[in-house]
Amino acid sequence: MQNSLVFRSVTKVIKRNMGINVLLIFSIGGLVMASLIPPQILKLIIDNNLMTSNNIGLLRLAIAYMAVLLLVGAFDFIKEAVLAVLGQKITKEIRMGMMEKLEKINARFFTANGSGAVVSRFINDVDAVSSMFTNGVVGMIIDCFKIIGIIISIYMFSAGLGIIILLILPAIYFITRTFQTRMLKAQINNRVLVSKVNNHIAESLKNIQMIKSFSKESYMEEIYTGYLLKNYKTIEKVNFYDAVFPPIIQITRAVVIGAIVILSSEQLNYIGISLGMVAASIELISNLFSPVENLGMELQNIQQAISGIRRVEDFYVEPEDDRKNNELQAHDIIPAREDIRLEFNDVAFKYLEGSVVLDKINLVIKPQEKVTVIGQTGVGKTTLFKLIMGLLKPSKGSITINGFNVYDIPTREKRKIIGYVDQSIPMIKGTVAEQISHKDDNITREEIEYALAYVGLTEYVASLENGIDTTINSGALFSQGQKQLLAIARAIVADPPILLLDEITANLDSITEEKIVAILQKASQARTILSISHRLSSIITSDTVVILENGTIKKSGSPAMLMKSDDWYRSYIALEKLTWSN
Image (tube, rainbow, N blue to C red; front, side, top):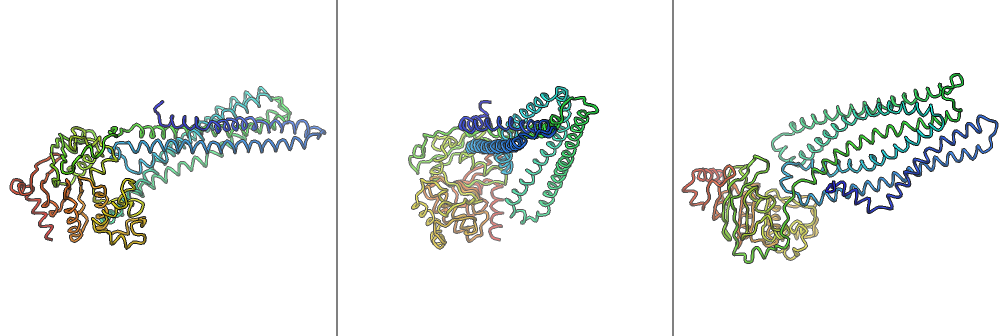
């Protein structure tokens, strides 16, 4: 329990806010005590004034009655305000802990969990945890004290009436709990379906271009409609219980109050209490139903929060990346640019148990060698790049640069060693300069301007409203080819001696591709280049071609050697030539 993120966060908030905690205890005590006073004043008003001809002190009692009601409201306001503050502080503390965890978590986690599921843990589950301490545990303590106080007050009026209330209390709770349990089940199903609806919307927006390209709008709409219909049915159940429960409670309250009035009547007089005591008891019993109802809701909130706590804790115990050697620096790994040796030593990797993506990868890449990795879709080419960058850890074996394991290299040093150009070209919110520097303070403005000039974007960027300081809220300012040039500038701005190119010309026209290939040819001088490409032009410029098949290296060698010795490679080249000519 000591290692629990939720436990540590709540403990930390409580220790840091002792003054607020004292105020909360004071407001709770005041609220419970003050809420028991109005019925006592009502008893005095009726028995000592209205039932006699003596009206002395009636005005004072009336003012006192209203003053106590105002005091109850004041205590309740303070209690709610303090709980809101504490709830927000607990929420902030838990989310900060989760964010710190997110920065350390193994990249493999994101292959098994979509963005919608992760966001749900940060928002819905943390909110549920926060409600456990505000509307759950604290509320339950308050209501338990209220119930105890009300029963004691009624017992002081009449022992018989107190026993009757004790006997009917379990029945009231049973009715309340039955409805709220069924309502909770419907609400949980509703939360699951709402999560599916939100995740479907997010995935649809993320892949909208692909959906439109393949005319899958109807298919996505059908799935969405199915989720909405199921969600509608669960909401119907929730609404049914919401509609039926209050009238049942009101009828139960009326029956209990009616029974007390009848038993206290002059004809029966079983209870033996005055009219003022009857009126006070009626008010106390009316007040009794509210905390009993609240207890059921608070138990429900606690149950929901327990589910949220489990999901938060499950997230918090997800495997983390191994600790990096923070003393390791780029110049220790690569003392000279012309002396870089990248080695794959019996590397194997699997995302899930039994699902092997790469196996027995052994390869030595010489200084400034140009290597292209080819193979059918799904053979593990992009996974290989993620392993080189240290985003994933091999299940077996290691990848080293000059003998240093890439997985042990601190993240801050990797950019000085490896530049990565992705075909997806993610844009961040910020200026043109920040698109290239990624807000890295170690990269100077002069280096950014040099990178822009290197890829030939200086003139275009200068034409923008604020030049290099123009804010980019979307990718509309740049064409696909210009985005690719920005990605290259981003990769080379730290002057890394190794470049990884992941099918960067896949979505470009031939003219733009020629321009980018020319820039890459220039960037490849004095650099080790590893590329994934389906384009013939990129393969021809490589020193070595590595053919991946079923997660292993089928064959590797120079393009000329493979043309002579490998039928698959010859077929591949023939198909590429046909595609290129068309």
